[in-house]
Length: 55
Image 1 (spheres, helix red, strand yellow):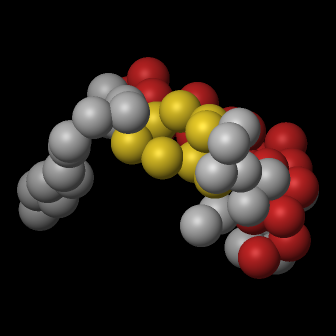
Image 2: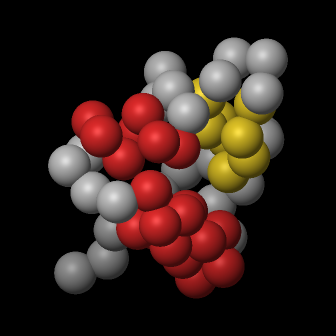
């Protein structure tokens, strides 16, 4: 679980704003179906997905 955006920022040693920027980038540029689940207090994929890295 990622925890709240503030908790995730702390885990990753970055600012909360940077977490929001990364999430926004992943949603827009990578079409990642990421949402924040308030019940779980965690970022999750809204549906099945995968990342494909191309060299």
